[in-house]
Each structure stands twice: as structure tokens, then as C-alpha cells.
Image (cartoon, rainbow, N blue to C red):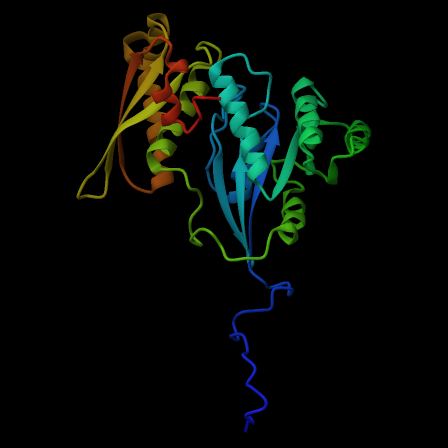
Length: 319
């Protein structure tokens, strides 16, 4: 029996471990930085185990920050796939680079991906200098290591480690998965202790309409390769649910000139039909239901400078 002089001690619930135990709940943001085509989106999709960010051989495919949410044991890791950092020349470029640095500034941890086959190019140098300027430390992930001889890889790792901004160095293949589990295991203990910020089964915070537009934009890049200039975008104009569980999605593919519209359409409309078929199949896998996809190609001169287009893809126009 507890005496009046000795107040009872409040005990934590049995299912709530002390904060300093390995089973304490952790949650935090990890920003993936890198030059264009360093493999950030491929790594994100590998980590999450689902298609979250679009991938294509075209540089600067990712235009805005994409969140991928992973639950691993007692931790929820929120990965931020940022646009590639490069020398901006236009308003769209500046907005993309600004989004990347904002993602890094807001994150609890930064991972710099470096294409091991390309080494320290001008864009990677720009990122390293930016980390030094802002005082941010990072984890270095040398990606695509399966394409590089071991002796060259070791020399690159030593050169980058000498920059003095990296706490740890990992050698990975985002495409094949090599070394990715080791990278993940090292990041989890560095996340802040605290409650999860998203439901356990949520994989991303990207709205379905934007995700659907990104899927179609990916197919535009994949099907047209170098035929179409970089300044092309896709917007979801309508999303209609039906009683049978299917969905009708209407999208616009914006180009800047009539000649570009002809390229997207193809002879007799065959090219845009192929784009739509591939995008529809990908969307059906992602939303797990039947999709009716309707694509329209529209000429919008100067869309890359319109505030409305920036808002649609989640970028700051005033960058």
C-alpha cells in the first residue's frame, strides 16, 4: 500500500518503450540529392518497393520533390526525391534547382548520389560546394558501381571522402539493389525519435492526379526519346470515378510549337495512341483498377514561364 508521503510513480504503458531503446519509434526525412541522371528516382523506387517517381534516360526528368514513405521495423523513413541539381538557364530550371535545395534544407539527413561511372562532373562539384556553403553534412552513395572497375571505384571514393562533407560512404546499385539495404540500415538509427507522420500503408504524398500526369510524361520521354525537346509537360484535367470501380482520366500534353504537336501525335495519331496505351497499363498497375485514359495534345507557347503550369507540377514560380 502506498503511503501519503510517497506519491505513486506513473509507469509508461507496456507497449511504449523508453525513447533510448532500439524499439523506440523513429520518423524523419531523408533527401536524395544528385546531378541529373545520378539514379535518385531509381533508388527511391527500389527503397519503397513501388513505382513512386518516374524514370527515363532523359536528364532532368524529375521536376519537383517526390516523397516516398517507407516503414522499416519501428521507423518511418520519408525519402525526398529531389530534381537533379545543374546550372539553371531558364525559370523552370531555377525552380527545379531551388526545389532540390529546399528539400535538402528541410531534411533530417541528406544522401548525395554520385554516378560512379561519371565521377565528379560539374554538377556534382556544384552540389558538394553547396553543401560546404550551407554547412550540411551528407551520406555519400556511389551509385551504379557495377559499371566501374573496383580500383577506379576505390579511388573515386577516396577523392570524394577527402572533400570533408561526408560522414559515411556506401557503394550501391539502385537498379539491382546491391548495397541498398546497408545504406538503409545506416540511416534508420540517425532519424529523430518520435511518432510517424503518415499512415503505415501510405507510400507517397503525391496526389493521384499529379502522379497520373507524371506516368504519362514518363511515357512521352520513353517513346519519343530525343525527338521532342525537354520543355514538354502533362497535366491531368479531369478525374471521374465510375460505379464499377473504374476511372476516366483526361490529360493534356503541352508542347510549345505546332511542329512538336505533330511529333507527339505521330502519323495518323499512332504515336500518341502508343503513349496512351503504355501509360494506361502503368496506371492500372498503380491504382489497381481499370483506367480509361484520354490524351489531348495542346500547343501552349511559353508554358515554361506560366505561373499556372508551375503550380500544377508543384514548383515555385518566383524562384
